[in-house]
Picture 1: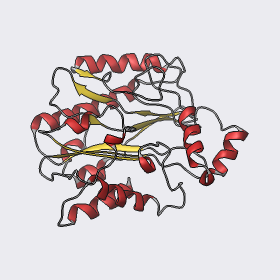
Picture 2: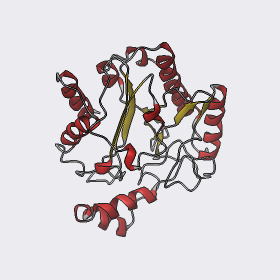
Picture 3: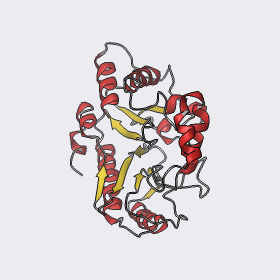
Picture 4: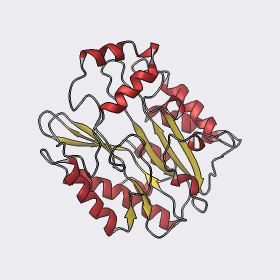
Length: 279
């Protein structure tokens, strides 16, 4: 979060147009200052494991990306932020050198004030909190997804429209954080210890270790597990409405206590989204 905050604060005060690539370069530079994470993210493509999407509330098509892995959705140098009506979808996928645990972080920022969009943002945040509150030890991901899908339908939202390249079920609203579901094997540890020599194989290994929060997944929530809650919701029957996405994390500690991680507030304030601080 802090790396994105510093990068965003810098580009917002510059008296020139800010492109997706401009922000991506600044964010990557801030991330690479840390000695605790690898220099690139595990979610590749996009390059460096970073995704940045700019759009406008009246031109939301770019927010309706089917996958961040497609080249047309990589950060571009000719797409610029509209500081009055702009929408940002931001994502990075850093990995701890010490543990190999991923620290994915992402959110939507909105620089406009259209009431229907601000209401939508608050609603998505509220739904994710309800999903977290419903989750409990021993519950399967398929059961939790069924509950979440019910909330989506009640709010005329759909999570079924986008393409997941790596999930066999074809749709999900998150995944576990390896290796919170089980320890790395000796072979996996060896790969992590030599990650800088072959990052592509390391990133693939991390990707394949995930258990998806999907309608077909029978694995259950257990102590020590961390998983993301990150639905990508589209308004049913309204193709001109922006998609809003937040990457939150549910942690079930060894004690059984659960914790909901977002860490968005500082960025919300920077973007003038005070309405999103209480959800």
